[in-house]
Amino acid sequence: MNGDWKPGQRIPIEHELADQYQCSRMTVNKALSALAERGMIVRRRKTGSFVASQQIDRTVMDIQDISTAAELAGHEHDHRILKRQIEKLDTSGAVLLGERPGAEVLKLQCLHLVDGKPNAIERRIIMLDAVPLARNENFASVPPAKWLLEQVPWSKARHIIRAVSADPATARLLETERGDACLTLIRQTWQNGRTVTYVEITHPGDRFQFAGDFQPTEQEMSDHSSRRNAT
Amino acid sequence: MNGDWKPGQRIPIEHELADQYQCSRMTVNKALSALAERGMIVRRRKTGSFVASQQIDRTVMDIQDISTAAELAGHEHDHRILKRQIEKLDTSGAVLLGERPGAEVLKLQCLHLVDGKPNAIERRIIMLDAVPLARNENFASVPPAKWLLEQVPWSKARHIIRAVSADPATARLLETERGDACLTLIRQTWQNGRTVTYVEITHPGDRFQFAGDFQPTEQEMSDHSSRRNAT
DNA sequence: GGCTCGCTTTTGTCTATACAAATAGATATA
DNA sequence: TATATCTATTTGTATAGACAAAAGCGAGCC
Image 1: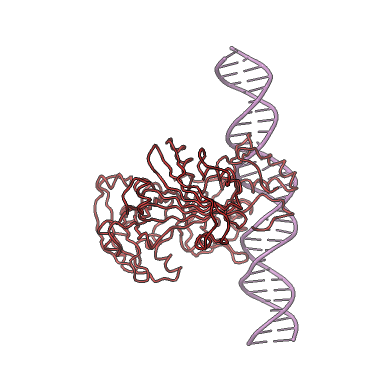
Image 2 (image 1 turned 90 degrees about the vertical axis):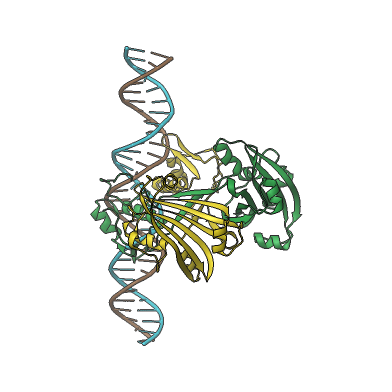
């Protein structure tokens, strides 16, 4: 019963498995549904369940707010607002965000320091119609990411990770060499289909990385009487 | 009922919710368990369920085998083995992998081409005691990642994403400028606590990025009679 | 005070049952 | 032959009930 079915192979139907493992169909269903959610198997009504043909490597990355992450890791965090300006979205910005040109936005630029060293530059656009309170907030005490998390709920986020070379301004702020590799996280956040905020956070490549773990078979199909040990 | 509970706030107990929403406790339990798995709420026996205090941004990234990803996207993929050598793990390699020095490993270096253009350099270490078949495989027709996926199951993977500057050798192979920013994916894969393979895949920064979406409230606590529309 | 013991609350999980939804395949019909 | 309809199969999901496991709480005891 050590789950050695081959990719593409059909799994016995729920009723048979319930019979075989002496448990109810609900229990089998829950286990198989969990496997399906993790992409281990594919299920179709009437057709049955099949072992997923290709093992996709999937990883879950916790991408936290910089200040929170630093505090959790026992480091000191500070930030400085370098720019704070209300503008109207120009055409290129509107295309980038998928919003209409002319919408009022708050553009922020913010330097993050961890233990006194520059750790990231945050370039952010906040849609003022989605977050009207931002108009009167100066972000002096609470960094923008944290403030936004507390203020506005969001229903969808998209993350992109890129490597870029530091342009002169970035290099100067991050106290690194011009042209050095930087890791940029781009995040766009929506609520009800409308952009809340768009942000590019650029870290010096020699002081930052993203990490994520993945266990594909955390909970396994198992005979409920003889659960095998964690390996 | 539009889930507007505040962070830290206690959620009514399952029985009350079942009562309130006119459904069984199992249904409530399933919904809350799903929320807990997504990190939206924290649950403790006897104490109750609480709205998670900090909203962690979590994203799921599908990190696929290069050749598979290219084929799925309709591009042509090719690869060339640049180096293939059996060695014994030296001390630094052993520390990197968390394995014992002296273990026999297969070291590979492989260039990936997508639509004829260099897209990645793969530097891989395969533990030969975990994958003895690799000793006689030349990886000429099937790229190493794909071959390994077919050959060996894995129980855990760890991913790290870094930005690095291209060293001269990398720049030459990727047909980019020396010092240009590159995106490196490091992946270590285990089975039963033993390393199967360790790989560094370096992409040119101007031709590659990682992306991931996340919807925190995909399935929501809901009155089963008045389910709200997708937004 | 500090300790153990048992009670209670709350979540975790399994069961048996029921019905809904999707759909592959068979059958009937034009 | 092609199309529509029916039927059987399989998964999806809800329900009520039962008991287990964790953990807070207080009573009683030293």
